[in-house]
Amino acid sequence: MSQRATDREYGHYIDGEWTDGSGSDTFESRNPATGDSLATFQRGTESDVDEALSAADAAFEEWRELSYIDRAEYLWDIYHELRERHDELGEIVTKECGKEISEGKADVTEAWHMVEWAAGNARHPHGDVVPSEIPSKDAYMRRKPRGVIGCITPWNFPVAIPFWHMAIALVEGNTVVWKPAEQTPWCGQVIAEMFEDAGIPDGVFNMVQGFGDAGAAITDDGRVDTVLFTGSAEVGHEIAGKVGGEPGKLAACEMGGKNGIVITEAADMEIAVHSAVMSSFKTTGQRCVSSERLIVHEEVYDEFKERFVDVAEEIAVGDPLEEDTFMGPAIEADHVEKISKHNELARKEGAEVLVDRFELGEEEIPDGHEDGHWVGPFVYEIDYDTDLRCLKEECFGPHVALLEYSGDIERAVEIHNDTPYGLAGAVISEDYRQLNYFRDRADLGLAYANLPCIGAEVQLPFGGVKKSGNGYPSAREAIEAVTERTAWTMNNSKEIRMAQGLSADI
Ligand code: UN1
Image (cartoon, rainbow, N blue to C red; front, side):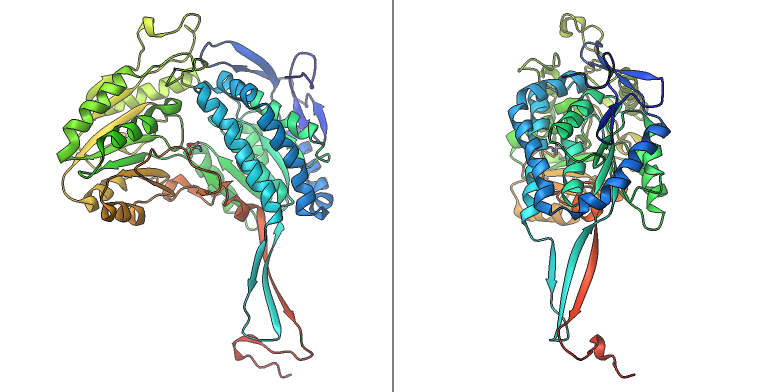
């Protein structure tokens, strides 16, 4: 990483320049596995955001005049860089957010997949040719950019998710002001350097480092036409309520879930155990699509429980840079505290704890990693009851409930849907009627059959229903949030003829 802002500290990228900004506060990026400081960053202020928004606003008119294909050229440069530097960037992701190295690299892979999709999309049709009631009329739906897009992204996919938002927004002709998560500013710095290296025109892409106050300065500003947000339900609901309520402004937010996997009596047990382990513990359960509820039919409950518990007892928690580590640390000390509270809540509500590796044994913590934010799997069983908070509130950690059900798939889906959320889920079964029922009736944006409920591909919509989100800030469907639709109707005759049989007489 080259130091472009100052000799010691990294700043913001505004209007094609690196700047320390107007504030004097700084913050550290820390490695969650060791607690070590990685670098220091300037903390952005309202005035830095104001400058970035002015730059984005001013750059919009020229940027929108370029063709889709010319705009995509800048993204193709970044695509090549993401591929060439794949392993190096994957390591940066792992060092900064603590995910296992295979996941750190997959984050970068997902980023270039997204850039490839968005830039490739520049050569695809953008709109529809629509039939008209009047033979001499042509009717179309055409897209145009909305203007300035404010992007607020989370720490758990610090390279992929920024590109989910920004690649499409930029190719569609919008300009961008982006705030990376305060836990992963180093990834933010690296991405901003890529835009600079690609020679993106000044003001088209702007990045302000900082915390929630900088984020709020972006979302609340009248110059922002769309806010794309991926992150916690708490912040997302606030943004959706505030921004979504303003006429002319759009907020597309994707938040968390209390995701569930239904394992029916017709499940292949190998697939069931494998899918549940991946979904519950990969990335230390810190995905918005991670599962925290396993809803298992009584006929296979005991077998599933025994096998799942055996794996949860054994999986390797440790240094995320080691290839054979299954699960790295939690992101920060506050998050460990939060996970602990969820574990306690489950106990208080009557959980029978099956695996408690919340506090890792000393021998499990790798040398030199004593200050890491370590947590291990916490697995419990509990009798399903609609009033249990532990089955409704998202923990965002390796914390998972086993729920036994009897009856048919209808009952399993009823339990599955009994949360305020609806992001990702899976059904494990070899009975196609059960699969189809789940697909049609589970409240979900992402539904999987005989697979983990993690690992979505970018060319599919990524978003949720109920409290998991409004609109799609990500992947394929983000195009809806960053474009306006114009219904363009054109008369090819010398006569005015109206639809609906309207008289054109005057
Ligand atoms: C998230 O959970 O915050 O589907 C994003 C997945 C990844 C994206 C996850 N492609 O697991």
